[in-house]
Image: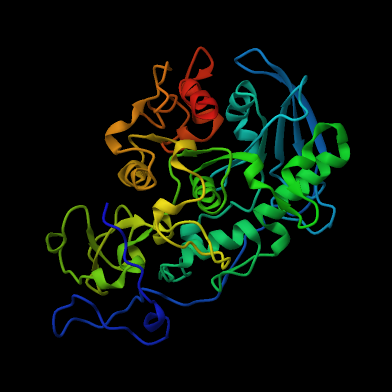
Length: 425
């Protein structure tokens, strides 16, 4: 993959219309800015009225025969500060074996856009079978990062928006002028608050091993993490800056942006699809999607989705939150990183190249996850072409994340053995 050039967006952030790189003399004025400015996106808080008990509990038995207990914890109840109020209809899920719980490693999962932790119990059962306790965290995931980086007028914000929004969503610090969120709603605060509450309620459980009471921060180095879709991008950001025990990406480890937003120097004005190369589409920037077409009333560009630039930076070493170095200097080594991608989802167009850049292996080294092992010690990349269950209306992308969308054999997800391999290899 050609690495994206990180360029200064300063000249594009004003209200004036910028020049058009690559445009022919006399080309029409730019009606859509590459790095648009508009009012900050205020985090969608979802349901904020508490309902139901603080904690629900039920028993489960894993495919490996381990008996365990699952807790569904309302986020505001796991909050000593009393300030968490978003997505109260989405409960944190905590799964642990009934015996030998203290001292077990912790697996933390982050779901995709609009997903609920209660729809990720299959991954939790695999984690318990693999020797972990499991938390699927409820966070402010109602809206995609892409939508948070798009103005109401459909103009695209600057190329660094993707990283800034993710950093703010993760840490609660004010990284982004494009995104407003209360710090208490951050992933780190919600996870630390849940761990603190579990420690207070179950002091013999050893939950204090996973957070720092003095800083109220998770101890990422004491955890393994996974994420699906938007959550996969969050896992990718965490693993860039923290050396976690291991990481498993479902579909992606970094999100997308538009080529000319990431790098304005590649902008080419077009009047017909034939003016563009490869898979690029000729359409206005504010109408760009899978079905866009030339609009003669607007300026049209050769557009394509590309990886967000932060995917090619390394660990944050100077403490400013942003990645330094390149993709080879990520904090979590490739030897402890794994990925699963569906061959018929959009992420298949770019995720294999990202994982190659991160050192997980070339696209040619993907292993078919469907038959179920045995897998080799060097196998870190897995794919499937099995469609989601008939009648579910699930997409191939959704089949990588939600319980009800996963194809199964004898009631067990067909990729279960690949999950176990990634969790134990």
